[in-house]
Image (cartoon, rainbow over all chains, first blue to last red):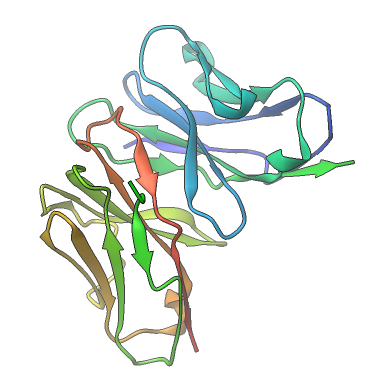
Length: 114
Length: 115
């Protein structure tokens, strides 16, 4: 069964600074990987996903993520954070066979300081 | 499309009462998922349906929880009887075909408080 680890519970970044959120996964084959964002009181919105091809994936809102098989990682990055990026970010892994069963990490709460 | 619609947005109920959460998936999507989010356990998949058929309910915590999908446009998650530890945000999500690489679209959730 697949699993996801997000080692950082909270991260504080200054507005305009770069951001990297960590995600490590466990799965026996090439997984499907996702990053979702959750704003307060809202559902989850997909930022980007990876399932094949170029290991550097571009998403919405200026986010990107890089799949590194050797490190079992799928870290999310943004070169310059905006105050509106403050939210909770979830990494998720899905099996690449059969029906989708997304397993989510515990999330990283991003705080943006002025 | 209006997206995945959940109702109610908030529910406060007394312990022992029956609670029913409702979900309308995006039209044309054939897979539906119920998740529960708590501070302690994060996001947990409770059950998912494909073409209205429950495929995996291994995440359903106990017999007090049941879910149905009588047709392609409606699903319910019922808790009977409810307990304070069921307090959480319950999300419904749908996807086009439920396969691994397909994006799941989430509703805004139902915040359940059992007192």
